[in-house]
Length: 388
Image (cartoon, rainbow, N blue to C red; front, side, top):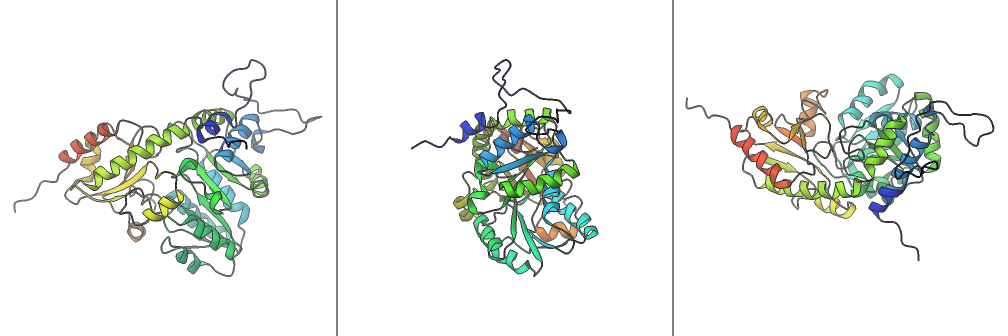
């Protein structure tokens, strides 16, 4: 019996462009925007998503996600928007999880009405919440897990089975988990999406997106993609392929550090609440443990009301305030000011995003250094109690 290749072997070797000319150890970069069209097996063009570097890095992500085929895009939102518009048209309806990435939320509420595409957001993340939102003309279900920024866990197999029951397509944003910690296709999900800017890239220097699925679905997405033009440059493909080589070992450290930091924060009396699926008291811990290989590098926490949130952020020395996430360095943001800033205060309150909530992307630094940084910032951010 031939042994299946391990995670780190797949990360390292699959999807590499072989250097036929010099035998170099890494993929060469093919920067051409013009290729022959006569007497060739394939007419290559960057906007057709089929240059050597585009195909290679897509193959690596496909292997990691246990899919048949895939495409890489210039951003996560390019992947998400192109994929949704491939399968939805005027008069269709889609059910979306209420806790989703702010960019996806904005796409839906700002653009879908103009296109005549109807949508409903769930009132929770239970399978029953999704079922309650299904209508006669529903075509698809869209969800993400862990969710951004509250780290809620959705039952992947449950939602996938529900979609099949009603003959719907299921889409999942797997950015937060990464293919290391969760493989949704193994649970029956149809289409898996990534902001490859995040863990797949992992070094805060790439903007990219990806989608993987069956060959039939990817062919349909490709047909839309070449018209919308969200292709990834070959240089970025090279950087992404290089980065994914270390994905397995990076995620192992992210997982380890995040659990350690979550336990520290949970025990700290200056922290009101910690959201991390690896904690036994997380409301979805049992589901997370059943479907994830690791709990990820993302968590969020609410500062106690006696902590000045802005002062806490300002006094951090090692952990950086930053718009994005999932780099090797630790970063924080206030979702109310960044990822969910375009939502109204009422919309944020409805899904549980307060002004004291901090999303924490735990990097690969020594965990004790991160703890020390948080402790000193908390001490400096305690509000003075009025004596009047």
